[in-house]
Image 1 (tube, rainbow, N blue to C red):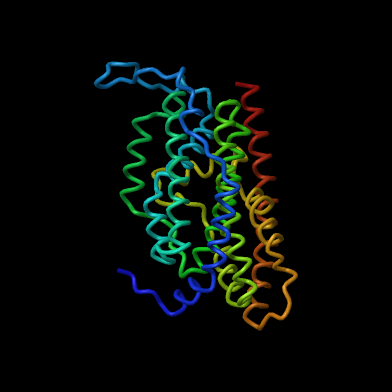
Image 2: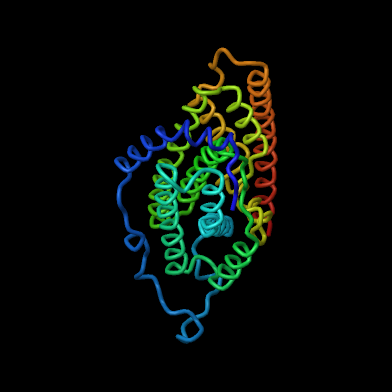
Length: 315
């Protein structure tokens, strides 16, 4: 059993009333929805195996390889929910408002996995055997980000939930499938509400101890990586997702980090001590460097796609 540190106890108590208020606001804003209503069951048919159906082959999927990779990464991330539940509970609390939120969040995230898997199977969008093997391999590693302490969890979750919302929404938009787009837009709505919960907790923490929060946020942003590092073939899939524009350095800069820091008014904070000022400076430098890397990535991608198009013309 993890023993809570004095710092953990302090932040759990300090943010408890805000967590309760935000939990109530979340419940008022959230809208009930049902995964089975978003799955195109009419497209479904038996697979090979005990039911002696039709085996899967790539020609059955209308989605591009990059979009299939995006959906697999998104689903396996949702499948890894037990690890996230354990990590958040271990670093915060399973009691009071914190526990109520943890269980509500877990139930909503599990709904995402149910809906995504139903869509992928019914639409025959990906190889179901490879998907199940990837799920077993990924969950078997127990690999999840492990932020340190309450502030680490809140900071990481605020950034990750926004990144996940953007990833789902962008994947739907470029999927070319209205059914997929509708489902991912609905999931993104949940992710946005989750992001708001953590972002507003972070805002309250900034009011209590801006220096400590900025140090944690700086570390979180500079070390941030999307979930999935333990997935089979994650490097290849992440590259495909980036080339497709679903999630790349430009998206991370423009649609995640800059809006998050602006919403928290990080650059407007006053009265910081030396540690807070240094953290804010490091944050600004990191965002500037990311902007430059994103520009180079977009330029290289455009060049590579142009070469690919010319080759296709002469093939």
